[in-house]
Length: 383
Length: 136
Image (cartoon, each protein chain N blue to C red):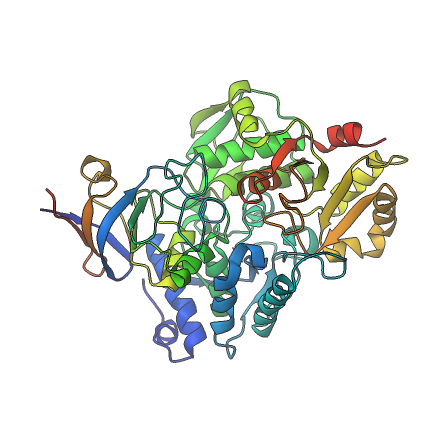
């Protein structure tokens, strides 16, 4: 890679061990991705906050970082493991480690935003390059907002937050954003779970930077989130495109593919717990859920994961009150991915509309999942 | 003896037995990040461990947090001696190995499955961008 004098100095430790480590990480990624140089970014979004995901080793890594180093661009943070303002029976050790992680990030100047949907909350740059680690946020930004990011790792996004730079490669290069493979839709994709399954299938099947999807002309926010999260969960693909992909090779997604994908994730008839989240719900989904549950109550315990700023906003006060009245528990600052709040000891099965939630509940928390769209969950689980 | 060329991503040297798969790994959900045992029953490496092996796999997939799993394996001694990516080295693997000092290469000028199987002894020299198989 061609480094500037300053970048070379940083890599050689002239500006401290924090930047040295950060550039060493970025150099390895740059090499892997055939980058020839670093370019500046406008924003970083870091994952690796929940103690359940990064563990003792992650706590140590963050603690060992040179605290004289600071982020050099606006940097936001993914959800952590739990909502510290609600009662829970989590161990003192979990909470202590969780606090350590948060302290490490805030000492670096990271905003403790605890959200995986920065695109619904912040005034993100309208264009240009960012470094987003959270996979649903990376895919959503590339595909729907038109901001450019590679599908970063927790550590690469942290390194880019510190340096303000990212290796110039892959989805940051216009030519490489054009899909070479396109999904030929041969079945009806109607509900958010269908969009999630489509994304999951595409990510699992296609080992490319981006994928084209035909016959989708209009994506609402809920379906766009579901498609982004599904795609981000299963593979390395960081972008979908619903236009300008006429010359791509075709792969079919028909009834059979939909059925097989569903069978992989939909492993229970019914759920003992209703779970909404992953990605966290924003204003639109909460408003929709509140509308369709109007006058009803949940028959089973229901957990809704959303950002605190959404839950506490004056604009959403009535919506949140209505959902709470229907019996839902609103959990802020956390999300469903490897959550310690839902364990095999407490539940054998859950019902959710999220493909990402279903995937991690089954694989990591070892809990079976009934996969249903939001409307069906309300029909079957409310009275 | 055969010598294969490769591309260095993270430097270092390692000698040991190979653990090989054609299936990608989600480092957050498919592996015990302390012992190195693959926990996903649908993965072809289920119940096998990456510990003290040279892992040959296409690439990591899924969660961005997977990068920390490499570091956790290293801190707990469950780490592979080195890693070879047969597809294209991805950002999760590259950044995870960079902070864990696990030698990492990709771009082999060779179809690994023709001559390497589980247990094959190899010498990987990432610094000099070469892999040596002794049995041939």
